[in-house]
Image 1 (tube, helix red, strand yellow):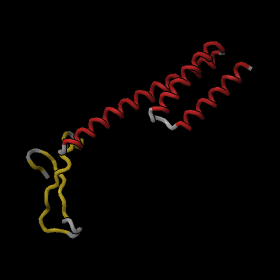
Image 2 (tube, helix red, strand yellow; image 1 turned 180 degrees about the vertical axis):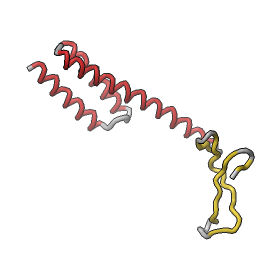
Image 3 (cartoon, one colour; image 1 turned 180 degrees about the horizontal axis):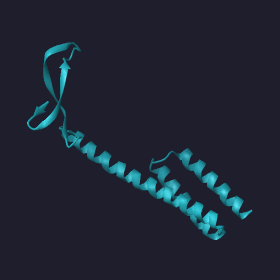
Image 4 (cartoon, one colour; image 1 turned 90 degrees about the vertical axis):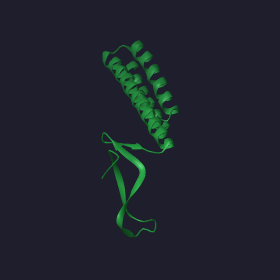
Length: 124
């Protein structure tokens, strides 16, 4: 249904939960360009904050995966010194991601342990 040029959600039930003959307009969301946009100011702010946090989390996860790949490439190359430096970078990235809540701390510990065992196998 269109209302003032926007698609709107309509309600076919009243507050008691029973159906009504004429639908009423609901205010919580307008749809612009296929995305929901809140009418309420605090909800608009929450949507913006969520978008920013999602972008930040995606960026940090991507950087974390890149550092792990660099470490694994240094393992394949067989350079122990380079692998040690890369491992330190991976540990720092994992700890930072865990402290920000992007990954679970148990996941960070598990990855550090597995990568450390790979590094130990290279040095042995």
